[in-house]
Amino acid sequence: MRTDWAAAINALLSSGLTADQIAGTVGVSRQNVYMWAAAKYEPKGDSAMIVLSMCNKRNIKLQAKKNPAV
Image 1 (cartoon, helix red, strand yellow):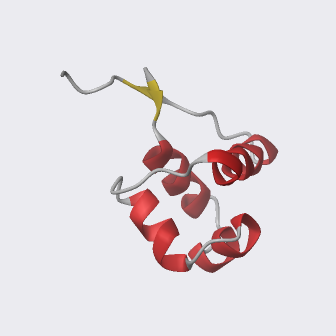
Image 2 (tube, helix red, strand yellow; image 1 turned 135 degrees about the vertical axis):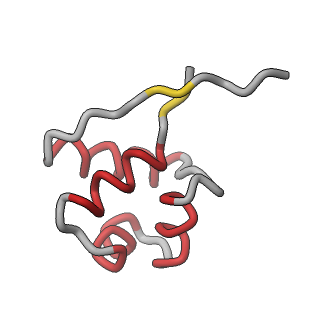
């Protein structure tokens, strides 16, 4: 199982944060936030930890998704 980062980012966006606010807090471009929301990329390392912290502050529970079959 892996974290469903797209769901986490979309929940942050639904909570009233803008992509600019998320990007500024995490230290990435707004385009990165949109790519994460579309599940084209996932936050890694420090970015993932900051997104996790943002979710925790807003009581957003992270969801798991199954790894794709190999």
